[in-house]
Image 1 (spheres, rainbow, N blue to C red):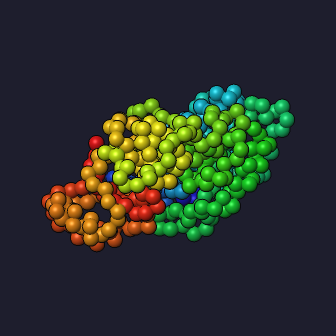
Image 2 (cartoon, rainbow, N blue to C red):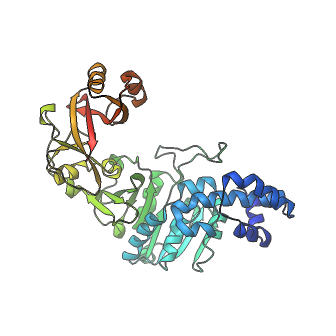
Image 3 (cartoon, helix red, strand yellow):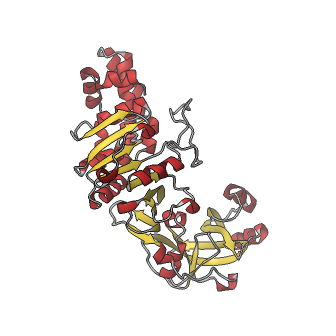
Length: 408
């Protein structure tokens, strides 16, 4: 998307065309394009409208019905906060009695929309001109929300007493500017020094305005969590979508937390207190219990697997692998339970023989904490039986082991 394409769409003819399009159908796109051209619409208007129709169809997964009235860029859609998670962000500001939020790096405006939806004043900026224009279109229904094309570093922020009811929300850019690939997406960056604003600058903002929150990558390192803040890892339907760091009155629990969110369910939040005094990892394979549990990935990212060990009276297989052994069969909403069928030190020949003896030919291979490639392992095993099994490749006492498990 560029400014010229957006201009075509926000005009009367372009917007009317976009709103009148049928549900997006990739198979019928070419035929629809031909019909619209034959009806007198220019090639540029048709192309811009169909691009947005395609992006809106993808956007419904994150933004629900709101997507049908929004504009998107490919990068902006990929980086946009899911509606349910944005609502959780906005509620923190409301509970902290914040009245106005400066959204510094607003992207297409998903978080700004959630904030405005709670009647908070929103002052949003984005350093990319196209993205800022798109966000302005998406926030058009809220009179106390405005968007400007500007860098976060150049925004004039309140000082002193004026910060009391003011909040900041930062979503630093984690993509390099420059040439995009064929999907229109640009290259990701992972260093805290490469994001924009940088992590150092984000912390400067938080020192200036106490009610500050920042959306960061799920790979955010534990050692970088500032003292007195909350680093909150959040998952949606099993996928870790962010680590948000919260300062000042926005902190709910100091330290690392993990929120497990699923459609149709109440979110579960775990804290460092839940993981305190958890047992040491297994001392040997002989201590393996009848069940092995795998916590939600947000729990693993937050380093709170100990909370699961405490919940099931078990122990992690090894430091940091995320799998927990137990002799208790409990239903834990934020974890998967497997029955252990076999456990052995990692050895291709031994595992191949076991699978052959049990007529196993279809494998699901999971792995964590070992330098083994599942595809390579699958080729090495050469299974041919009629049955199926799940195999977990992981560590016990720093050594690679294999568990054959079944669900439940």
